[in-house]
Image (cartoon, rainbow, N blue to C red):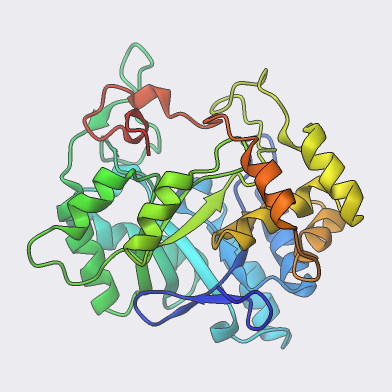
Length: 324
């Protein structure tokens, strides 16, 4: 990955993905309109890679923001790399294309640039994003992810998405797809939680060996939605080592955390709805961490996962029971 020139990485299907993306997930207490406003700010600031998902319930707002920025001449559609994700209630193969078409309808776009399986484990199909039984437990479903993948391949062939990939998969689940008889397209990427407290070094090496790009979400580990995250966990951006390195380079700890991923060959998503921080998060291409900095940040790894999907821990495709 050459960080000096194009700020993009070539995927295994020939398409290019910007190495720095703008994340759009927000907890339920934040108005959906904020995602649209922040997307416009991000595009004006220079972001061209927008990461979203059906599950985030803000694709209408983001689509409106994209169309506004296209209409006013800031960008053309082909300048934008837009990622959406197939939610877990749509993993049955016959539901995959309708799931993508729902996102396209909300976005009012003809195609997405990247379509990911949001997670390997399926939930009961239906209109509820998190279907629950009478005890309040989330209702799981069992779907062979290879069948889901085949349906994604058909979406690519139909021109509804340019590239396809996965999210929250471990290496064994990636191998299931890679070794599938009749595989037409390899996953281009695997989007996973990745930050200095969970640096995913083994999964990164595995993905590199298969020409699959690792994409880091929660790269700043600042997401604190109590529905998904333990509120008592340490705050990465208060980490003394990260702060010392930031001070040395006259940067923010967030910029150092993002730069760390880029230098490892990881595509990184930066999520903020704050205009100042959105602009700061783009300022990661004009400085370089030293080998000593990288070693010190690598030393922070504690295999610490913020988002653990504990509701599905007994599912056969629960991804986090493997080491990587």
